[in-house]
Image (cartoon, rainbow, N blue to C red):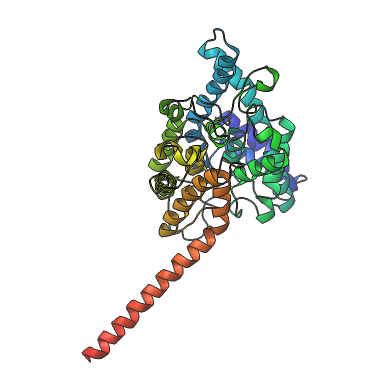
Length: 393
């Protein structure tokens, strides 16, 4: 590592203040801070002293995503070969999935980081590590055969409109990864929905159908997958969001490291369960339902991208609620609305995307009213205390 340190210091010399390429220093410094801990220190008194910085936080989230990513590679290969029939091995499946997914990750990082570097040079500030997570999340929530140029355009839209337009890392009001998916969903709907986009190369094989469970239910058909298949993730779906088991492993990592809010995660599942239970109660009340309303409430929690969205995107510390009570409200409404959108609008069976983006917009309002309620309660206590003092006197 010392050899690398010396080489980097040599490379950085022309980019030092007052040197010829000073303007491009942020791009070079980004490589330095990615490999090494930043050597700058706080100039003024710090309220909190901690070894955790933005890079460590982002790396922790990336590590939490790895189980779902590895499983997603295998599952995408498995879904492809199982449709073809014949024998195949574990390595055949994971190899096929990797050949599809790795290029998507490379394109996402290349395009996104390229824009981040350009804005850092233009604005004269350092490159932040926020895109380390976003660059991995975007391909993980896309269909396996989405053309790479569509993925690139989605990344451009997410970084430019969803992030840099608001000031960059820490300033965005919408989750950038979901912003990319929303752009792709509305710009290229035939590549983002249907019964063939969720299985690798399904459109090239006659008779192959990779409809998701939510799509099957929305079309009025019965589901042939068991609850264990749904929980483990051996079902068609986006690149790496099908396995609730792997998502929960990631959630455990985020909660134990205190990177993700357990309040948002727990309240999100509670909200989804509450809405699903309401729909399950409709037949008891004499209201005729459909496949989605009659679908067991607990299975609503383990299909689609609900678990993945709640754990990895609803907990985004920038676009989520900041107050403790606000986190409970914010998470509950995301789960509640996700299931509601699933049932009421079959055109958008994957309601978690719209639910999170909607609540991203309302998160500041939730925090505002939570804070105002605290202020009013404290004022009431003060007035009550003053009244008691006057009575005592």
